[in-house]
Length: 300
Image (cartoon, rainbow, N blue to C red; front, side, top):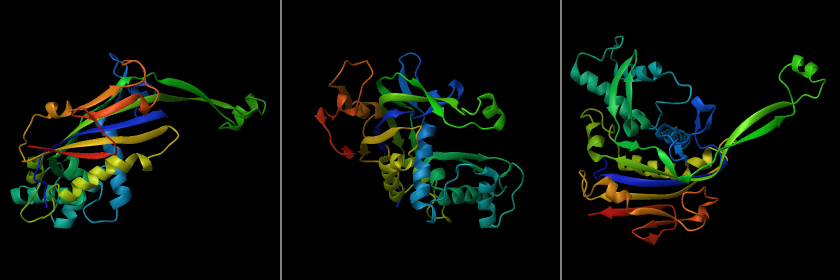
C-alpha cells in the first residue's frame, strides 16, 4: 500500500576518530563549513549508505534492485526496462507513445528501490525518463565545530624493488589519514505522499513508494553504519531518529516548526567548542529527554 501521509524526520548520528565524508577537492579531508567549522556530511553520502544496506538485505527480492550501484553502468540499467517491456530504444529518446514512455519510467520505479525512493535522472543514451523521488535528505551538519586531524601512518612495506633499494631494505612508506576526533551530526529528511502517488502506473502495480518501503528506509537509517565499517570511518553510530507523521498527505504543520521541537543541548563542555563524546549532549523532544532510536510523533 502506498504511503498516505507526509513525513519529516530528524536523524542524529555521530563519529569517533573517523572521517564520515571526505572531500575529494581537499585531499579527502572531512567536509567542513568554512564559516562555522562545523562538519558536513552530504545527502549523497547518506543515500549511498542506504542503498548499500538495502542491496545487502533485500538484494535478492523483486523490486529491491539498486539503480546507482557501485561500479554500475547506467545505460545497461536503463536498458532493462526496454527489454522487459519489449520496447525498442532510440538513442537519447523516450518512446513517442506516451503510455509506453510512462511504462518505461514506471518499470524503473517498480524494480529499483532507489529510483522510487530518491528519484533519478535516467536521460542517458538509453533514455528511461526522470523521476522526482518522494524521499529527500538535506546535508547533515555537526552540532558543534569539529577539528579534523591529519594523522601520519607508516606502512612497513614498499611498492617497488626500486623503492626498496633506495631505502637500503628499510622498506617503509609514509602515509596520512584524516579523522574527526568526535562529532554529532544532525540531518533533516522529507517524505511526500503526493510524489509517491505520482510514480504509480495503471498497468504496473508497485511503482509507487509504499509503507513497506518506508519501513525498510527506517531500518536502513538505524542499521546502515553497522554494515559500513572501515578503518577510515572510525566508529559511526546512529543515535536517534525522530519521525513526524502528519495526519494527511498535505501535512498539518510547517517542517521547520517540527524540526525546532527536537533540541540538542550541551550538558558537558562549552557550547560552540568541540565535544568529546555523545554523553556531552542531551537530546530532547518538546523539552523531554529521549532514549532509544526511533520515535514516531503524530502531527494533528
